[in-house]
Image 1 (tube, rainbow, N blue to C red):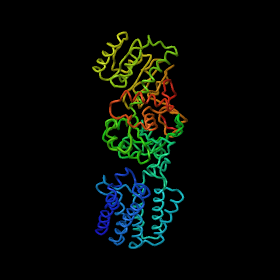
Image 2: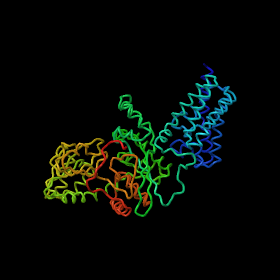
Image 3: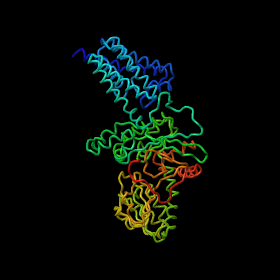
Image 4: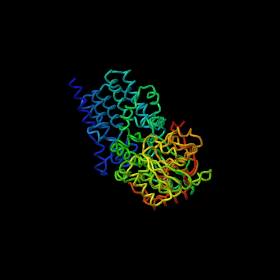
Length: 559
């Protein structure tokens, strides 16, 4: 028992030595961790530091695995320890980003030389690895197939201790490759030879990335890699509490793309969708976790070749509205989408009022309500419409601020009757309702809406509950929604309707297409010049701001 423990601990400490990282640091001044936020195997390391240095690092890992088995007389416990140490050294925050294939090859050689592994059992996993890699092109799949073959080979040839060690190593590899397996299921895992960072850009293709989050638990099952969890949840085998405890420990993943967007100048636009799995209330209530995850997403976007990275929905609020994220990842241009969102409001509200009148509404006799009027965006809407309607109701949670806002508007628009309320039920008297809250759940339900009312919903997640659609004659216009040019396609349901995207996502597209990176939206302030720029540039590139009632998809999984 003492010898087994010594072999496990001693080999773990040897495996934890970052020999490859130290070599690369010595030569380049950077560690692999600083180059990549995610798994960085030798095939990708070649693109960062070149073939000789990458292969030298791989050789050191191989030597580490072989020496561990030599020092501890081929002990199976040493095989487990050195692989575990390489994958998860202490402290964990300094863990190397490789997959450990070099160490595995050294372990295999050491088990054959010192641990009683037959040459057949040693050769089988190598052959299987090579065959699967040649057929599929996926390193993670080949590694797991090779280790599975090792387990079977040692189970047949013995001794049993080797089979147990092989099984333990396979389980470690499964856990280490879980992200790659998820990407395989989502069909987003790069094959061997596919360059991770895009160095030479195609001038005819605009490449950007955008980070989304699930609006509800149902959204967690959208990606194919996570769909198998849905029946476990519905049968009560997986609780919501457990899901909420686990999601902060997951990393952002590329889980889809928006394709089919062709700009008015003929260029194609490719936008990668990265998913950070926190729910809206988690993002709001765990700001440090959310900021860390947004930074991870920005690094991944850079690795995938994006020129710009957009923060969508509640992600746009984290890290001082993107400022901290940009500071942490200066290699890529980051925006929270605030300027074009404001631009769409500026453009859409007059169009909505015109549509209201075109269908028989009388603005000068109409009552309008603005929900979330304590906020900057909603008050901006109130200021735009106060002079157009007969009565205006400001709805919010802070009565003192509401009254101050109402007084400001009364002085400017004395002809309009302006009242305040802290109850959403006050909207039941309104012909027009504008909502712009940051509430993670709907705030406006069927009982709050009169028949025939027009609703302009700027909330993301949506402020208007699906029950409102049952109200006779109701019109729901999704605020901050844009139709990109071309025939947009996405396997991920963004909940804005077919061919529609949120304005914050469209800002990422426009900013990247124009390369106007000085127009990025960061922090709480939005410049009027930037709002006007996105209005003009968006129209020139073919983006259309939604100003009429649209059939927006309900919150359900994309099929």
